[in-house]
Length: 217
Image (cartoon, rainbow, N blue to C red; front, side):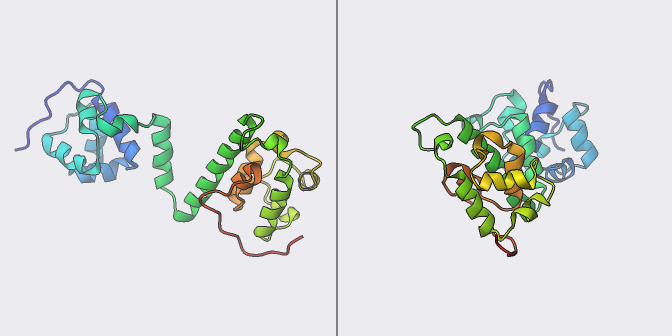
């Protein structure tokens, strides 16, 4: 018979849950790998029951940090790569999406990061877009690359600005770097625009695929 897991269980359940989330598994799927049902997995994570050694050996195949589970100390490269609970939750949520949804998530994250980078770049640095002066031109280029009109972009109701304000941005009457919000750039990213290119003048590693062509203006 498998031996019962005989160590101090203080904090074990929380660490087990953290590892499961880090690896992107549901309780049911994680428990199945360990050879137990979902309710048993839930009991392990809540500290109501202790798993046996067969369970630990099985989940080790998922690259679970067993040393961390038992001792609460990260081992090897896992210590360097340790994710916070929020980061683990984000990855777990990402893994539960479709390929198409993941592309949008990556674009939105890139948009937010580019917005932050553009706001915090110092004068004279490569990405000092406050003095770049060409973001409006790249915005126009991206819109036309996707075959969208300004009206079509605003009609999605995802932007916090109106049509006139959008047109002002393309015609350089508004500094989009300082005056647009992250919500607006996230909305453009969800349409397939390369926000890093618009704000920083550098193409993203993953260039969004153009949508179906529409009339260009």
